[in-house]
Length: 246
Image 1: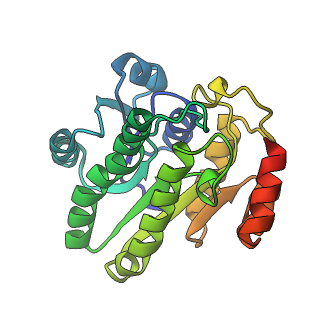
Image 2: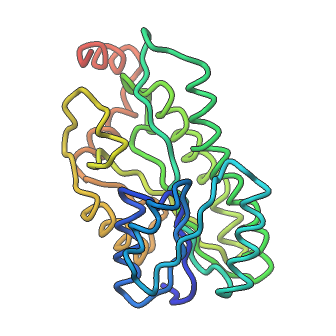
């Protein structure tokens, strides 16, 4: 891994916050972004290597300006972890197009708003490392994930499509697919969450995966295996199983 300037979006809590603290503990300067300045200050917790930068990733012009400011002040962004996301359980009875639009605006367009300037700058330098945080919910349609899962499926597809050209340009692109992690987002769930992990554990798994050579960082392995096997099932069997979950 490089030791230059890192940038994490969605760093006001959860996985993003723990990533920032573990990265900073390793001696690397990390810029943390999010919508809530007070949460970013809690993430920084007076740590000299964590630099808060309030930012709404749905504002494309603000993202462009923020990246320009970061690079002017702290040098090139060597590693970007695009983690900002919203979550809302959704099924048949609470299906809502406004909620879907809101989640796509942050989870998909927020990533795209960051990717465009990052890719342009990294292509010009011939180097860089971008990590997109998606979810195992993007593997296949799951009950209660009609909105969130669709956004994460879009990110997985986007990363798969971009990876070959990014690699040819000297840019390392990875996708992260975590299972259930104990964060403010998942606290709204009113159903059992199998293999639930602490954010500290999730952050450590991500950083370990970033040191490796793989495209996908996915955990916990047993949950990932079950869901990947589910992708191989024919629709009639897969949908029968998910109906039993309901």
